[in-house]
Amino acid sequence: MEDFEKYLPYVIPMLQGAAVHCARLDHEDEDLVDLRNLLSRGIFKACTGILQGFKNKAEVVMPFAHPLLQFIEAVFKDKQIWGQ
Image 1 (spheres, helix red, strand yellow):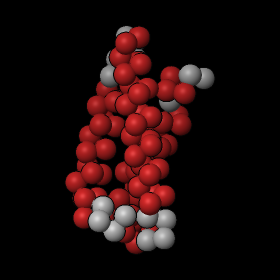
Image 2 (cartoon, rainbow, N blue to C red):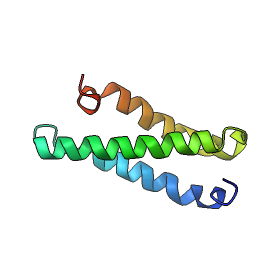
Image 3 (cartoon, one colour):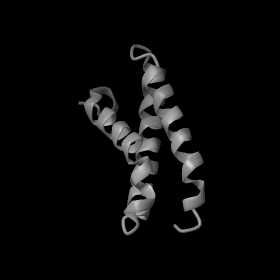
Image 4 (spheres, rainbow, N blue to C red):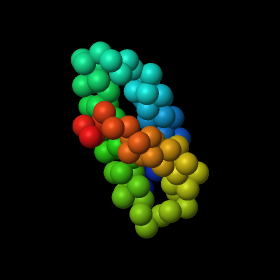
């Protein structure tokens, strides 16, 4: 993960942009709901991978923790993503 550290300032904004795009997709269009669900799951996997990868180097991810945790919270609040 040490080699990945230098990419965090670029990856996190990309994930944030994808999350914003995901939130703006039409909730009524079934195809877009499916796309939104896939995109959300992909972002979620990336976030958890980053957090797990740097679990022993918390100081590296602390500057990026807020946007990651914001997205995770939004995913859990969205019932359509998890099919509840």
